[in-house]
Image 1: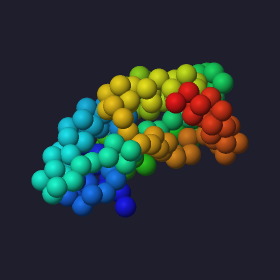
Image 2: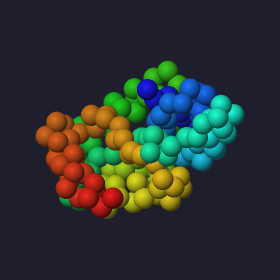
Image 3: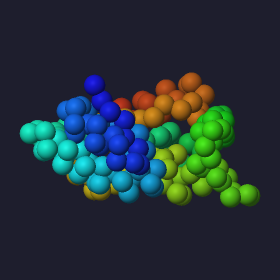
Image 4: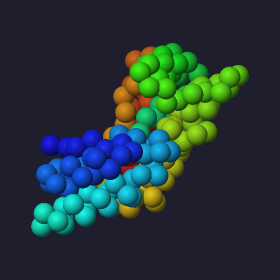
Length: 167
């Protein structure tokens, strides 16, 4: 069982109280990234109140990414479904407001919401999470249909062959 945590401390409180894993679904979102340490500390503090400790191996950090052999190829690939993804996320609560005239995918990457790039970019994002948070159990890639199925499978293959072995 895992409790979802985003920006507010609610997920950390529940994970600490009920001794569950914690999934930080907004780990790469700047607001979620800024809250990682605080929410994990809250989980630890609440767990201590109940006579337990939180295990960092049960902490999962989530981030969206699509990678290809080159950044240009990755950007080309996500033309397939990136804008519908943003439209979906903004449907009930506008969160990703791309300034007029800016490319949505470029804006998304520049603001560190996720990765559209190369295996090295994916490694850098995961390393950035590690540098911020310290030990954690799992990085979970958010599935999002930014690219067509063949390019998505290719991205997964690159992750398996180049990103995972790095860690």
